[in-house]
Structures are given as structure tokens and as C-alpha cells.
Image (cartoon, rainbow, N blue to C red; front, side):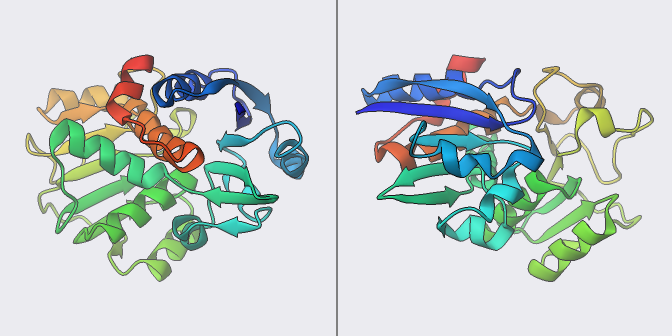
Length: 260
């Protein structure tokens, strides 16, 4: 089989997913190629024409993650809970959807920092599609408390209704084990400051990777936090999605080397 892969979304000209897909194919000893296909949110129904006819599987990025979930014939457990899909697979004449984003982040943190979410206090900045997947993974892994800073009250309410560990922000300064920034760079405040409760024992993750060290990440570097950007999350979620597609083991750390 010659796998036909792609990343779907808008914009995708910057996406590293095709590079990861082709590295994963090589690791699995499979043939195929990957491409970038621009699909805007109001064009989401195009996806059903692409999968099967032109593509065997695809990564999905914003702004399509929610819209595409409604088009799938079957969803995995995470996509069902979150209503967000980052992976599509045309299999047995059906469109299957899955979400590997949140678990990809936890895989990356486990490998790089030996991070175990169980019982931890986590702060998540943002409440969009990426945050929803990350909160789901943290809650499933047994996090003790997930404090969500959200500009969109409706998104925060959704998270609080679906996950008992979610809390709104407070002025408390209890130690923070992990802080994850999911806010797009263009939407960030220039006067962002380090959160209360953050110190040298805190891990700070900026899920963007352009630039590799954002001004936000630099703030946390300056107070001695262990920090990382979103490249590892990208690689490890891709490893999980390709294990699903190919039914072959794919190593996230090796994929990370392909884009580092």
C-alpha cells in the first residue's frame, strides 16, 4: 500500500506534519507521501470528499477540529468526550476520527521531564480546542486540580461541566506543578507576567513552536522553570496517530528528532 497522507486546516503552509508523516512512514517501513491541503472552516464538508478518494488518513489542525468531528462515522473515546478531532482515517469504507493531542503532550512531558500528572496542580491558559484536549488528558491521568484561565466564559463553563477537576482562576499562590499556554501567539497580551505559585519546580509548556522560544516562555526561563515549546507535543501526538493508522509502533522521540 502507498499511503496518501495530509494535514488539513488553514493556514497550513507552516505545518511540520508532512515531515513527521514521512518520517513515520520510514520508521514503519511503509511507502507513501504527505501534503498540505488548505481547508477553511466554512469548507469543512470538503473533508468527506478528500478522505477515501484522495487521502487514506490525515492530521487535522485548526480551525477544523470541531467541525470535522461532526462528519465522522466513528469517533474514539477522547474525540467523543471533547468533540475535537486531530486525526482522520478512512478505514473499511468509514471515516474514523480520533484525538491524540492531549495524550501526546503527556507522553512528551513524561519522556523529557518524567512528569506524572497524578495528583498535580496544573494551570492551563486558554480554553479552545487544544486546551480541551489537554484538560481531558490531565483529568483522565488523575490531575488533582486544573485551573483554566479563559477569555471565553462559555468555553470555561463547558470544561467545568465536563471535568470535576477544572477550577476558575483565583488569587491563591499554591505551588503549580505544570503551566501550559495554549493561547495563539497573535492573541496574547504583551504584559503577561509569571503566574503566582510558579517557581523552579514548575514545568512551563508553550504549545506554539514558532518562535521556538516565545516571549512568554522566556519569562518562565527567567524564573528557573523547566520549559519547552510545542514541538515535542506535535511529534508525540503524531506518533500516536500514526500507530493508529499504520498499526505499527512509532517512537515519538525519534519523530521529534526529525523536526528539531
